[in-house]
Image 1 (cartoon, helix red, strand yellow):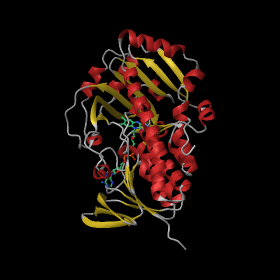
Image 2 (cartoon, rainbow, N blue to C red):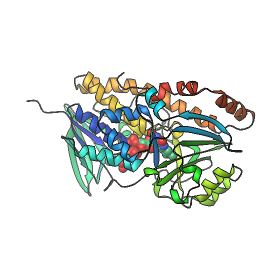
Image 3 (cartoon, rainbow, N blue to C red):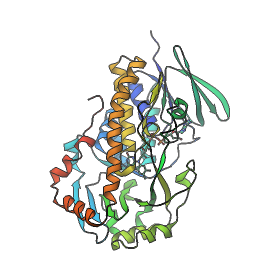
Image 4 (cartoon, rainbow, N blue to C red):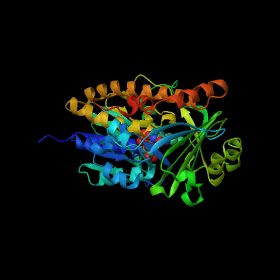
Length: 402
Ligand SMILES: Cc1cc2nc3c(=O)[nH]c(=O)nc-3n(C[C@H](O)[C@H](O)[C@H](O)COP(=O)(O)OP(=O)(O)OC[C@H]3O[C@@H](n4cnc5c(N)ncnc54)[C@H](O)[C@@H]3O)c2cc1C
């Protein structure tokens, strides 16, 4: 009997864990190496659109995810100045019918936990925490991965290394893709907060994804964790000169700065921003698309390959798509590694570039002011429900391998 191929994945984030499940289903043995000692509650709320949730359904995790996620009724867009409604797009049953899977909001840690639990139920997958990938050496018939585990040097031998190690990917660094594509501060920061429901204004508890558009800033909020918490993200244009290797989620932001920044906004928005006591400032980085994400038996996935600005809420969704696409390419290429990487990369670079450029455009549109904002608002107000949804078909209707 032939041995299954061994895939080594650097990083147990959303991308790495989904890749582990998808590859194991395709017959691989998988080792996931994670730098963190424990997979704790890091992060905040994320939206998961149908392009991601239908993959999670295929992998058998959607049902469990639905127990900890919420399905917002709609996307509700309001104008910052006076709170006027600009658009309402359904995210409930109508969206599920159109895009074939539900649109969810969930705490990132809950999604990660559901994935870890599914990994634990899956044969041939092991997660090694406290294990940091340092580098790799290509062999004639495989790949050797060097890591430290609890301070000890250790080696893993495999057939394929997947760098799913996030924005500051070490695997990417070792691939030597060049210096011109380093992450660049985008001139915007996301101030993120998880506000206990009992401290939030009543309007913020409604089951919708809310987007407020203002001059040089926008505000997003939706309930998560069975409605016990409101996830708030305030995106502002600013200057930032911090340490890019900082652990942002643990660095506190200045509540006074955010309150001041939203001072001229409608009373609802001010009430929400004013209720937050603890913000986390998350500088947003942009990175240009490169022409390749691989070298021989090493390939990148998720933020390691293509971080995207969060204005279309697609970073985790893209990582999930990558994982499914990699497994589909392996199956289509009878697990031939070179063929798998070639077809994965070809499809994914195109798709990720589309999302990257659309996210950048979306950010500029959100922050318009003056006559341009007036024109944007007019267009939004006149869009029919069907036209608004049709604009998202390319994004939410995407199917890997399709
Ligand atoms: C403000 C904001 C809002 C967002 N909202 C959304 C949203 O609504 N929807 C959405 O889809 N996306 C959203 N995103 C993006 C999303 O969070 C990321 O794109 C996604 O989590 C990336 O997943 P990943 O698995 O590629 O990387 P990560 O989640 O960064 O995981 C990388 C993992 O690798 C580990 N690691 C790092 N280096 C090593 C090493 N050398 N060895 C071993 N392990 C290592 C890390 O500890 C980590 O566990 C948002 C992002 C921001 C900033």
